[in-house]
Structures are given as structure tokens and as C-alpha cells.
Length: 153
Length: 453
Image 1: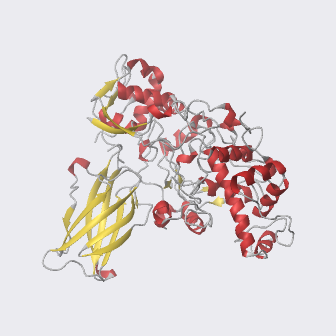
Image 2 (image 1 turned 45 degrees about the vertical axis):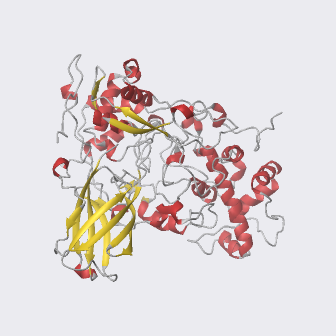
Image 3 (image 1 turned 120 degrees about the horizontal axis):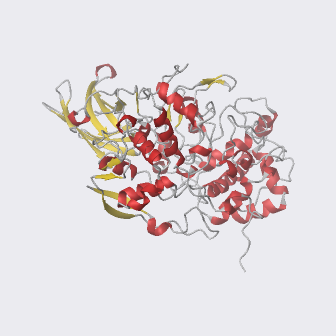
């Protein structure tokens, strides 16, 4: 990603430095090229039971400001999760060893629809959005979405 | 490439260019949306800035509209700001009669004190932060244990090592000092009958961690309605002080002019930043990775990170930072959901609704603003670094490991070359904004604005 350019080393008399298109500001140990990230907003859960789609509000996701998510969870071969099912949302920054500073809250709206409040991505870079669905705490199936957030994006 | 930007230039001059007149204007009109054409790249003759970098920089400047302070209905009241300014410089608010807010937040020292650790009545364990653009912060104190600037202002007043007062003692001061009483009552209404000794002891305040403290015992002996009346007075003092501190705004630094020149292609203004400062800015945006945390108008995300300094011998031992503050802000009776808030609706206080107790917040402290940073040494929450060279040494080498929690793992040793250090320092120097109206840097002649003839 060109993050380790030796800037001082490129300076020459009368010549502006660094004519290369800069990489986005991401930490060097995040791994992966953001251009290659699958940032689709619809995924199938690993247990193949549900199609999960999210939509942020506002859209696109703002850097370092609160946003909400609308979730729609459809059963691939049956009903959406029941009213007593567990649906949890969280997010993490791979390579940073931390996630959000906020604790999101999930509000069921019925028919497999949910509203998620209290999301805040406070740093630019690669975020993993986790949506856990299951009948019990010990049988949650985690679906992972990828979001790449840029300054001024 | 176009960019949707909020443009305030039309409205700003001259009312908010650091010179807020006594007749402060009404809240600003909605921002104008402008579509800006950004160049693919700009060659300043020293550095090439690409569209991605210019788009990024356009989120740093100009300083946007003041955020609303929903929990304080006096936040933009000029008379309250005048009173708050008078209080800010008034040592009568301390138990010794010798210390004011300005004793540590000295306008001549970029609203800090120039010391490693704060010193009020006694010695403190954290560095006194400067106040430039303080109204733009999301959380207050290094650990964010206050959710508003007015709630923050109450902490030092009662801290035994800072100003050493009690809220009942402060209400007595207001009641007994004729000038303060007149100003207070003209703004907030009548003070409680503080001369009724059986209702209001000389000093009382809740001291939750020392239930045998005489202030706490005296507080518990008061009637609940009298406690509330005093809390109301106490909160009003903080609200006036917030109204004043909202005027401490940093504008028109060389950096701001340079970014405007990049956006607008005004080559004649590229010289606002020296070649060294331009290289420093490029490094700040790029390899330095500084903008992972230092971004936006204050060059701070306003959030909390553990960069490894949770223990400093002589500074109070291990400091848990944000992790301990979460409970404090949640339980603070003066938070935005409490009965002294002027706007307690859930939506207006969402940052209190989604607090997260998490291991990664152990030893985490708020990212400081970099506005005027060259004037605010020493550095870090515990003042451990005497100068910017020491700060750059740290980011260059990342020595040691934190004794508690874990360091923000996005940090990588920068291995800065000597020229890069000089360039970064030159860039940081460019963040020093224009001087404030001198009238804001000293106490006004009285606690109320002079009547216009």
C-alpha cells in the first residue's frame, strides 16, 4: 500500500516530493488491501439459514459520529428469526485490537427487521461489522461484513 | 471530483473570528452547502498534495458552527457568557480566596499552566489541558468523566486539591458578595435563603468516597429540597462558565489559510506554510499515520486510546483513565440526563445511552487537540514529555509497554529522521491560530455587562 515511503529520501532540489497517489490512511498491520475488501451489505449467515442485509443511517457511514443500522434478516428456507431469538451487533478493527467505544443496542421491529442504535466508528480504516443471530446465547451464528472508512469519504 | 462542504465564510465575519462582541448574534443560520471542485493534485513547488489528501484536509478547516449545548439553555446567552467570564477569573470562588479557574487555565499560556501536573490548592496527578476550541469536544476531562462543559466546570470548584470549595459554600459566596448576587439573580432568579443557618451549613457537598467527611455529613443533614436548590445554583455557575468558554475559539492559523489555498488553487498563499511545514503536513497525513486519531477541526477524534502511559511514578500511580470514568459520567447527577440538564430527552443525550465498559478502555485517555500545540507543553495527560521532541521520540521508537491494558496496536514505531522531526514540528507550529480579542483574556470590569447608553 505504499505506506512506508521514505519521504525525506524522495526530496530533491527544486522538485516537489512524492508524486505518487497516496494510499488511504490505514494502519500498516491491518492486512489486506481495502480495494479488495468485499464491502457488500448483504451476506448469508455461516449456518446458511438467513440472508442478512444492513443499511446505515446516514449513508454512507460517517467517520466519528453516531449512526444507526436497519437490519433485515430473511429466512433462506423458512421464517425469519423468532421474536425470542437473540440478535446482537458489534464491530471491531482488525489489527488495532479494539472495536467501538460505544455499546450498540438492537431493537426488534418484527418480521425480521431490527433497528440498531449507538454505532460509532471513531477511527478511519477497516472495520468488521458483526451480526450475531441465534436461538440461544451459546449457538449464535456470526455474519461478518467489511466496511472501509476514509477521511472525508 | 466534487466535495460537499459546509461553508461558513459568509456568516463568520466578523462575529466569530475570535472576536465575539458583547451583543453576540443569534445562533447561526444553517450552513450553506457548496459543491467544491477539487483538483486532482496540487504541486506547491515543495510537495504534491493529491485529491485524496485535499479532501481529507477539507474536513479539518474551517472551524464549523459551534455545536449545540442542549443541556445548557444559557450556552449562547451573552449575559451569561459575560458573567461566566467574570467568574472564571474570580478567586473568591476558591476556599482560599486565591485561586480562580484562570490560575491554571491562564490565557497567557494558551489557557493552560505550562506545568507538567496541575497545581491548585495541592498537587494534582494530571496535566492541565488548554481550552482552545473546548466547546467542540464530545467529552470533558482527560478521561471524559463529564459529558458537558458546564458539568466539567463543577469538578475543579469542589476538588479539594484544586479550588477546594463546596457547593453550599459557593452558594454562600454568591449570596454574600453583592456584585455576584446581583448578577446571578438577574440571570437565574433568586438565590435560596442562604442566611437561614439551620438549612444551609457553611460547607456541604456529597463526598461519596468518604462518607465520614464533615462536608458529606453536613450534606446528608440538609433537606432534599435544599440540596436541590443548591445543586441548581451550582449547575448555573457551570452553565455561565460554559457560555464564556464557548468563546475560546482558535481560527485563522497559517494551516487553515494553506488548506483554503490548496482547495481554491491560490498559489500566492502556499507560502503560508514553509517548505518544512508542508513536508511535515504531508508526513502527518501519510506515513506518520497521525490522522488515525488526530483529525477534524481540533485535530482530535475526541475519543479515548491507550498509547501506553498509564503509570508515572509520583503522579498518583496507575491511572485507569476512561475505564474508571465511565461509571462516574453515568452516575453524575449533572449529566445530560439528570434533573439539572435543560434538555433531558434521550435523543439529545445519546452519548450517555451507549456507554461501553470494555477492556480496551483501561488506561485510555482522550486524544488532545493539536490547535496551538506548540504553546501547550508539557505533553500527555500526565505531562511526562517536556517538549515536542520528547513526544516525537516516543512516536518514533514506542519504547516500553503499558503496565495495564494494551497499547493501541495501530501504533508502529515511525523511525523518524532528523529532517522529518523538524518538518513535523514546523507543521505543528502552523496550527497556532490568531489571538483572541484581548477583552476575552481578562476579567471584565464587573459581572454584568455595562448598560448601553
